[in-house]
Length: 190
Image 1 (cartoon, rainbow, N blue to C red):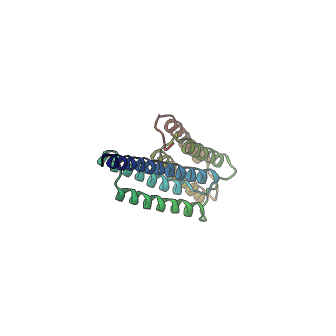
Image 2: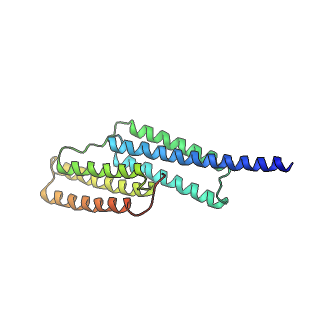
Image 3: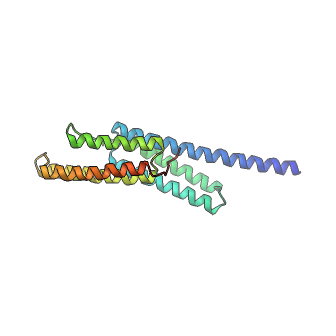
């Protein structure tokens, strides 16, 4: 009887460890899919920020559930996390395959935006950026993109020298934020 109880307990611990690894692997896979979408231009900054906010929320929920249960997840929590990961996976697919794409243009502002998107994507892939950090950076990128778009609309498709200078200052600040977030010691799912 003792052997049976011991082997049952060991099997439960092994199953829990396997499921924890599956959650981690799935988070890494989804982060890679988002990073690839950013890099290829299939995901806009706004779409990426939205996905990263959801990913960060799910990560926080998993942490809280584990803390509440002595480091483990209940079967109901595992099922709920799986459903949430399925929904997030579907949203990644839909966002990558919709008509919205990131267009940067052939000018200096566009080249700089593309470079910063590549730096964020690289940070996501390498694990230097957490989902929350990526979401904040992408949200800021999205705000700058909207400002450029609105300024261009107001000026017949062009930016004034004053607007270019302001966008350049904003991109300098964003570049520094990207650097700081990538080098702050926090790590994503790797």
